[in-house]
Amino acid sequence: MTQNSVHQRINQLAKEYHPEMVAIRRHLHRNPEVSYKEYKTTEFILLELEKLGIETHRPIETGCIGVIKGGKKSDRVVALRADIDALAMEEFGDAKAEFMSENEGAAHCCGHDAHTANLLGTAKILSNLKDEIEGTVVLIFQPGEEKLPGGGRLISESGILQKLGVQSIYGLHTSPQYAPGKIGGIYGNAMARPDEFSLDIIGKGGHAAAPHLAVDPIVTASQVISALQTIRSRNINPLEPVVVTVGKITGGTACNVIPEKVSMLGTIRSFSQETAHFMAKRIEEIAKGITEAAGGTYEFKYDEGYPAVVNTPWAVDAITDSAQQLFGEESILWMPEPVMGGEDFAFYLEHFPGAFFLLGSGSPKADSQYSWHHPKYNVDEECLLYGSALMASVAMNPKAVAE
Image: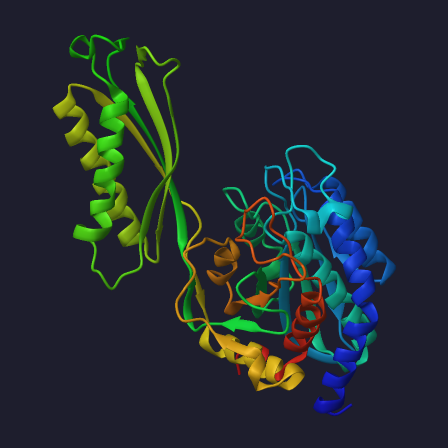
């Protein structure tokens, strides 16, 4: 086949398999499993791969690897990755009513059900084109993207990808910001490192009517939270993208009681370890100064999250080249700036060159323009036509590995 006819065949196969991808996505959406508990999801994926005659591996407890050996002998090995876990949350939304989560406390409100269905669709396409594949394609169905230490880290450190000879790796994420058929690409920094911290403000409990006899940790905590924002505005270069957010605060039991302690959880988003460590240091310094001034104490804990996702330039070119060949030049939308959300795809990029891109999935008709992790998060399933075809094309693109 010529390159042009291969792309035509890929698009044709994506259309043929689209109903199956939609059915798979809805099955997974109905039956979500949270990070590192994806046992039934893993068994479902393994069964689908086995139907296609694809060699499978299970290097860690959940998740799995599929290996497609092409008909054209080569040492070329390209990996494609999808994450399979759901979030620990409840969902709602009329657009998802017929396939809403049936597992209490778990929901696919980040698109991982679509990622998994998409990669299974890619597997079906590539299985039909096996004779045209040079070398090997490795399919990674990864658990635990939503929770530290990150399934990407566990699989990267298991040695399975090195053993299989992976030379480059590609991944995607659905995006409500773009319509189906649009691909969001970016060179270099793509997604931030999402570090986490916990901070306890410890005061002295007492009666709400006699605050002078207590040390109020609620007032102190409010001062700390406000002061944390000065790190971004006064301690960091204004041109450097960073975020400090306190996402949870708990304390107190009644309107007339000053509690003993207030606890908070937060996140630091940045693009370098040096900046992240500096921000953590400043958080503790601010907490120490304000709590001591109030007569209280504090306890601080900082946990490093995933590294930043930094795309390899030639791997981005492979994605955009394939997208243009499949869908036309207008399909590429260059991201104006990195996303401050985190992604454990970063761990793969510490071991292999590669790139991560956004797959347009937002539309009014599917009510799928809500942000990631929103309880109404949904995808326009038309995106599976484009994502599966693009992943298959990238896997076969001569530009997808370093020369």
